[in-house]
Length: 117
Length: 112
Image 1: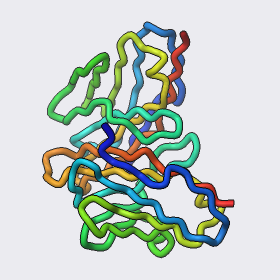
Image 2: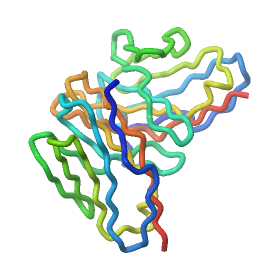
Image 3: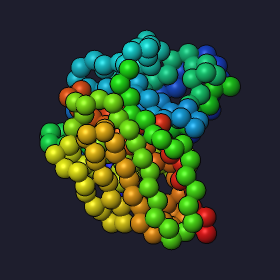
Image 4: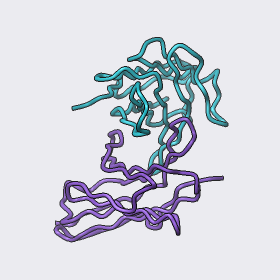
C-alpha cells in the first residue's frame, strides 16, 4: 500500500495566488522528506530537502522565499508555492526516507498537478 | 555537473519479449542505485535497487546489472507485459545526505 500521500492531487489556481501542498508519511516517521518538481516529458528535479524541526535545504536555483517548506511533524511536510505564476505549473512530488538509516531508498507520493492560469 | 543519463529515450518492445533499459552515471562516488517506474500522472514507484558492492540483483521478472568499471547500470524486464508500459528512471545516491540524482528517463512502450 501507499506509504506517502499528497493532497491535493490536482489544483488549479489564478496567477498571483498561493498554493499549499501537503505530503504525509503514512507508515513511518520521517525526519527527512524531499520535494521534487517534474515538467512534462522530463525527469524529476530535486527542489529541497525538508528537515523536521529545522529549516529546509534548497537546491541551487530554487527560490526559498517562493517555495516555502514547513516540516512541523515527523509525518507531515508542506510546500507552499507563493505568488504562483504560469511557469510554476508542474507536477510536484514528495518522497520520504525512513527515520532510521541503513538505506537511501526513497518512497514517493502520488504527486500534485499544479496548473496556474 | 554530475549526472545520470540514459542511452535511449524511448523503447518499443513486443509483448512477451525481454526489455533492457540502460543508464550511464558519472559520479564514481555513488554507491547505491535505484530503478523507478513512473506511470502517467503518478509518482515514481520503486522497482529494484543495488549497492555498489554487487554487480547483479534479481527480483520478480526484473534484474539490475551494475558495471562499475564503465559506470553503467541496466534494468532487464523479462517477458514484458502491457502493464510494464511506463517511463523508467534510474537514480543514484552517494554521500550526499540521501539525495537522489535521477536520469532522464526511458519511455517503454509494449505492443500487444
